[in-house]
Length: 620
Image (cartoon, rainbow, N blue to C red; front, side, top):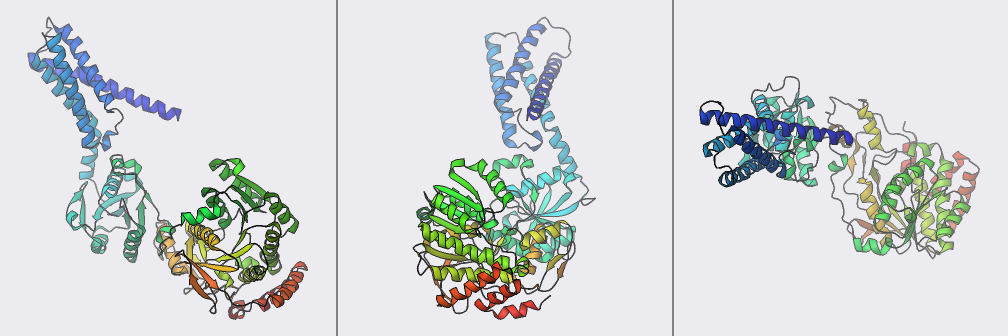
């Protein structure tokens, strides 16, 4: 920072010295033209004093109008007007001085001085910009750089064109502009033509041999972005988007704008649901909240949001040491240390769960602790039961004994007709909750949702790693599709579902339309500025054990009802014979404690029969 400040002072000093020298030259030129030669004049000493004062006043006026803080290569009309005002003010003062104290100074010399001084100063200030303008006019398009089409000719598009022309080292030559406003067609931005609307994209790509299109619209909605992206992607070119700009005033300095890759969140074909703040306040504000699995993808976001919605105290409970360390480092920067507590431990440890809940007496418990990675649970059925089933039971029972008001289980769409051990154990956890809710004083509820973007071990980080390493992106099956939602939106809906819970419900979140995984892979490749099947290929590997082509959010015999929140539905659950279930559960727990994986797996799918299981087990 000190070096940066020193550099600024250095450049300001250089500019001041330059303007002083230009003022001296302007005086010499004015005197020469007015007097016919530079022969010594009896009043020359007085004139030097007078015009030295004029130079100081002019420089001071420009400094007051921030003339020495302008990046002149990006200057516009406003900056030029400020210089004119500075010279006009200085000239007015100069006239007053002449009339008051320096009557021997010729008015013609004063006028010539300011004329020359202004011309010299403006020429010098704008010389860099004039040089760049000449370079733009006579540039050689497409020599080594990629030809890029700019979508949008407003503030952002114009700023991007300027930046790319000013900085050819960034590797792009802007060759054409697309704009959907017909009134702008056949006009130019920095000598780059606006050739038409989106129907001209194909023509522009062919004519200018463009390989990249940059979406550069100042205020763009998600719907507009999706519409433009969906149209562009069929041309199989690289797609970029501009960084956000704070406003039109930023355009003069084109260093504030740059090209970046699209985010996959921008390309989800769904609208995010709004929050009901009144509902959240009644549920979270001034409440003590415990989050199990609080260092995980979902759990950590629950922690962030309950703090955002002003919980009284947050307890983060997790056995993952590094995850807890990262959470602590993050929260230390954003909130007071007395607002949260960290408790290391596992939900499998009944005594630890009891001790933590008894110590803090939470009003609400969010149970996000679970083993979730399907392939790992296929080879660890006993551990899946210990964590996902016994751990859930431990927390529910302690909530009941300690008088916790609400318990919210984070469930998954993989619990419906489960084809894998992980999903089946989550379904059994739902059944534990359903049976316990009949006798518990704690209001117990579960929330089901599909995949979230960016959670650890999920498909998107895997795809991104492959893309970054320029490897083939591996998709198991071309017909596989999943529901997707961003983690923050999923958690907002979980919190609001928790507020609606009265006991025994299973809530389902509105996940929008399911997405084909292959389409997601294509979008991720494009979002990384690459072309699918050209820069990165898709490789189909076949379904893995425990995978289904599609995962439902409810059983076929479960009806769903609307709730007061448009993004949340409540399932009408089928009847469960809790006596028989508890007997099966006891046998399952004993098998898990004996670490008999085969027996555990058999019992799991006796409790939760699935037509998909046998089909999926044989798939390599």
